[in-house]
Image (tube, rainbow, N blue to C red; front, side):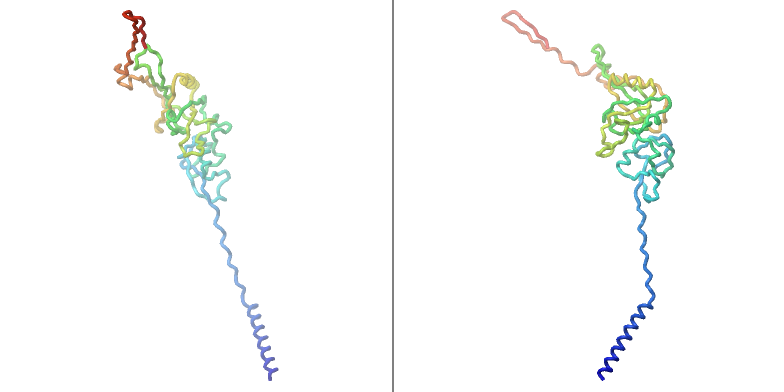
Length: 282
């Protein structure tokens, strides 16, 4: 009896095991779920903020940042960074760029690149540099492409002239184009400080040969200042040279001869006894 029960249990266990193996082998395999591909990498690139004509000198407002797929960006596209923006300041556009077009390396000619000046200058024009400081150079507000007047202020050391004629200011160059700023013709090299905090040292202007000679003489006579012209005034507007502005035209006190009066000379007399010995004036 015990043997029969044991055999029956073994048979039942075998049937259960066989059934389990058959169920597993006959069950349809689960279809693996495909993993979604990662999204394409995206980055911010510099593009033209407005239509730019060939020959334009790039200003900060001429480019903007736009997001696009890294793999879809054309070769030579510039990723938006402080360094990339600095390299574009003052660069010349080689071909016309529609709004939204990426600014490719081949599309711009940067200051300091070989052939930059030759490409920027108009026919029969010259380049001349003027030394300026934060005040005379309008505190870093001038960009390549701006048009300026060059004003000479000089003090005339001639004691024979009245006071109101000893200081004079005059425009020596009206309406000339700025083509570069700072040493090595590198405009907008912003350095480590905030944008616009640079101390401008030189401004390069596009002038005729005669105007270049006027600048050379003016730099020896006195101080030069740059006056920014309106962007809506047109380029190369012909105008008569303005008259000289004298110190008396600015200061009514000088014009009326009521400047600061010189102190009268002091006299020291030395006596010995009743006779006058010496007299000193100072």
